[in-house]
Image (cartoon, rainbow, N blue to C red; front, side, top):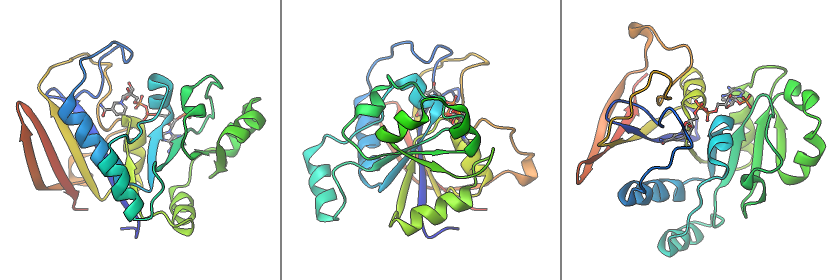
Length: 226
Ligand SMILES: NC(=O)c1ccc[n+]([C@@H]2O[C@H](COP(=O)([O-])OP(=O)(O)OC[C@H]3O[C@@H](n4cnc5c(N)ncnc54)[C@H](OP(=O)(O)O)[C@@H]3O)[C@@H](O)[C@H]2O)c1
């Protein structure tokens, strides 16, 4: 395990989907889950977000609650954590609202992405582009760099492909999973962990350390055991 703590925070339906088949389809706002997400993000020095999520959602989550902002100040943290988008391809539109949010922005990418993207020079002015490998992103290099820059606590906000990559790299210490009391279905709707999957006897096992219930919604906190 790394000295940096990495917590995954994801919400899924009771049938295990993190979004509907159409990720842009509107859904009702969820006060309890938003408050939970805001609290978890408020603990972070850096938030990791997959490029698929930023392409689908446009912007990153920011903290607004004055008490959480005050607590960050007491801890000598800036008002918002750094948001680091993970994008091997660097295929990110310059129109993304994320690129003009009032936050510190990093993008973990690859040399291939930097070479392929004709907008890389413009992107470089809007975010810090960090090259972490030729074609595959090297998480050991990423974690060394983050440790050198004083990052202690990472909150990984998904989606499923980024989470799979972090699981594969054995970087996840704990998980907060919200279970929304709804069924989305759809074999193409994303789930918390995508990727290639694990055979059961090599799968990461979890220990349930905390549960909360708000109405019909469940908040489950797990620790990774192996
Ligand atoms: N319910 C929730 O809590 C929740 C949370 C987050 C997201 N979501 C939903 O999840 C969906 C997106 O999930 P997703 O699985 O499709 O996408 P994702 O995990 O957000 O992003 C996948 C992309 O991230 C980049 N990436 C991830 N790991 C990488 C690695 N090791 N090396 C290089 N690049 C890497 C790649 O970007 P490039 O393609 O640029 O190379 C990859 O295509 C959206 O619908 C979103 O709304 C739901």
